[in-house]
Length: 151
Image 1: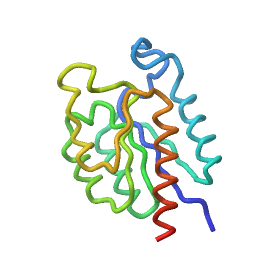
Image 2: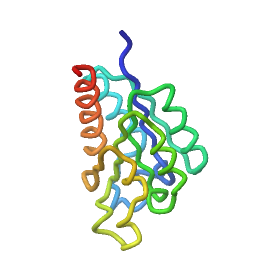
Image 3: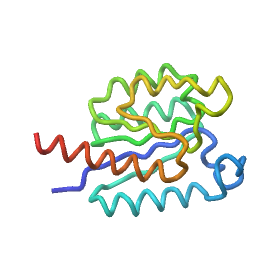
Image 4: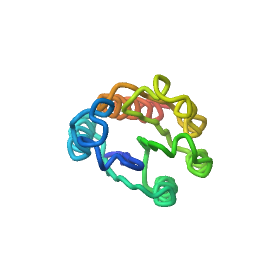
């Protein structure tokens, strides 16, 4: 049996990890994050695809693709969390678990970041734990998928 596929989707400006506001996001890069995700997924018996885009429509298309291809999604919608009803709608249409991840604690930042449309559609939300949030999201998805298999 093939390993369940998890899409790890990253939104705008995450390609700048390591250089953009390191006091908030740290000095590790997107490549470092993708390596962490790949190693975690392998240890959990999951397959992953990591993607990053600065385009809202492309992110929505990837979420829609997940309907046919993936067993779960880890998504850091970044700035689109706070603005994109369309992204929320795309996630709402999924019948697979979705974990929303934010590197920083969005509730400790500017007030406009406190609300996430994506959270309304996500299975769970992890914020403020840096890269560890992605590792925890993959573990959570593995557990959810295992529970579904047991039912």
